[in-house]
Length: 362
Image (tube, rainbow, N blue to C red):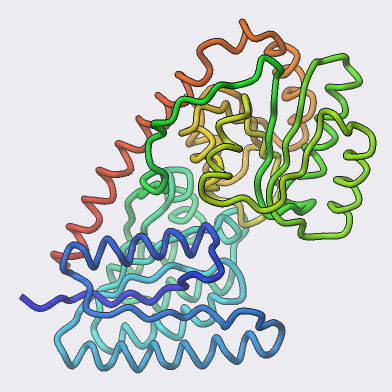
């Protein structure tokens, strides 16, 4: 039987959480024998402003033409992640084309921007989508938020959804790491104020002032001037106990996760949904200290560490560090973290198999 699924996605480069998941989904559909074609709609590297939108429009039109061609060749299903901001405009265009051509559509959501606050563009996308469109949400909180935030369109157009966690992405950790006797915290991201690096540095400084014997590692590219200034100031103030590693990949990233006791992620990013870095850190045996954004509270209720509102995060995280300063207090943390992740991963792999089977059957 001929493959029936067309995937319209943003693929690496650059490598982001979204593009990495997109690539894995395309590979999984291809491995199942269901993928008829995939179209990359990422704007070219370095494009910005008007050039970025013009490029995205051009690639969206190419994708629409590919949909028409695939329909003539017998394809009938579309897999497509949803943008989180103005890019929803391009999603709407593809939705209209898919509806006119009679495609069944699966939309994969990766942003809480339009879940936390109603988006007229997302509402329009749901109204214009083919009847019976299926939605893949990262957690139950996201799926419930979508269905309630856009209740009228959701019911009128027979939308429905299932949960597909990103926890199928990281592999289980098999490398035993020797952690230091000194409490070590880490933060890895595109280092910006909104993603939480300055809150991380403030927490580290407060812990040092409190007299906690602690070290801190930061990894990733610096994304704004305020974050750069804060990192440089911390390097000057604590040259023996603070390091910025720059971007890390492969074995260097694994070593980063394996050297920390707690991964601290105090993000206030509006699109924050289900950061892969939290799952990677948990897989490596690190506790998770994070703000309650997106799926984090839903995902990590059983993980060692804490999830707290942004307004309470500093005080609660400082208290956690104080209680886990001694090596004996941290005994068992890596095992509990790995067990929590392995449970999440097993559930996500089962969800993924069910989704691929459903898309294949149409």
